[in-house]
Amino acid sequence: MKIVLVGAGEVGGYLCSILSGRGSDVTVIDSSAERARVVDEQYNVRVLTGNGANARTLVEAGAAECDQFLAMTSDDKANLIASSLARALGARRTVARIHDHTYIDSSIVNYQVQFGVDFLLNPERLCAVELAKTIRNSGRVAVENFARGQLEVQQVRLQKGSNLVGRTVAQSGIAPKARICFVQREGMNEVPTADTVLSENDLVTLFGSPESLFEIRSRFEPGKVEGHVHVVLYGASDIALSLIRLLTHPRFRVRVIEKDEATARALADAFERVTVINGDATSLRLLEEEQVGGADYFVACTKEDESNIVTCLQAAKLGAKHVQSVINKGDYEAVMRSLMTSVGIEQIVSPRIATANEVLRIISPAPCVELGSLQEGGGVIVEIRVGEGSPAAGRKVREIPWPAHCVATAIQHLFGVRIASPDEMIQSGDRVLVITRPENIVPLRELLHGE
Image 1 (cartoon, rainbow, N blue to C red):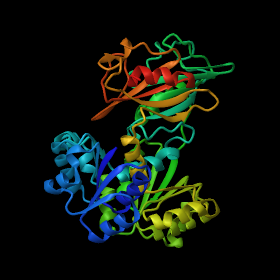
Image 2: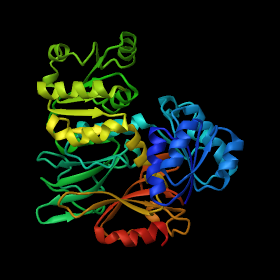
Image 3: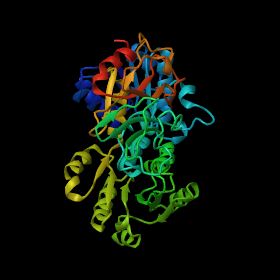
């Protein structure tokens, strides 16, 4: 695989170490002579010093013939221009790292289409998705690496009094917002068909967007009142903003501690439901005054690792139930992961690792990736790329001869993701999320990828 990588900073350098170790043909472009020298000395890659958003430099790097073009600098505009130029030159796939949330918003202009970039990756959004995993629903099965947090799986118990008891899956009315993709009861674990009848006390696995699943859960658990989840964030960073957007449901009570007064005021104006405290969370007195010890979740997400570490230690000592932290520097990350249990930090996320993992998933040549399993049920969640020779390409979901005990739950197209409704068309290059039994993985790969 021939890869051209622009940017050898925290993210680009980390990708260099992985890709070169895998034996890929990697060419790295960086504007810093010092960073280029370090990469050249440490890794088995070709290195060019220059502007990655310059067409002449890209031609010299071989962008026209590359399989993967990765623009990973810290400059959004440079990444977009570089990726757009690489696409025009002939790169097979382009991936751009972007920070500004504006470029994700396609309500006016779809920036991804406009610049011709196959994938836009926002490190802050990826980190926020990781942090939100346990906050949104501690009991669900996580598949946030599909569609970068747009979809997830939740498990819910069908309670007495629900009007879904005795109905078939087809009669449930769950579609098109979500799919029922697994049903577990005493003596039975199955991927349901349209005719599967739901019974009281069934453990039902649902798939859909987080917002739709919050709404649908009430139909399974009538009368159940969800308690409030109290979340305290330290730092009004881009990660914090992304996390707030993921916690828009009224059951989440979010407070943000931000030491910069102007930033705190802007955050309060942007999010009316969020309580903003102007102060420095490294102050133990402030944490005590704000009763952080009573929080369900404390998340330190500033850009200053030292502050994040100190506040997490204090929050854990005060009694916060779950403590999470962002670590930006690679040098700190390994040390903190080794100390997590002893210091009371439950989770650490890293922008460079979150971005690199998503890049590696995107460029992986593997046609099938297992994303997770359903506990004690024998069901697996797999993502399969539709190959050019696939017998499923160009057909609607209902026209495809799916194996028994198999549910197609979502389809990720180049520029979006949708629930796999019966009339949804599958095209070559799409990625299909399927919940099935392990023995169906090979036939599914043959059906969708065309092996």
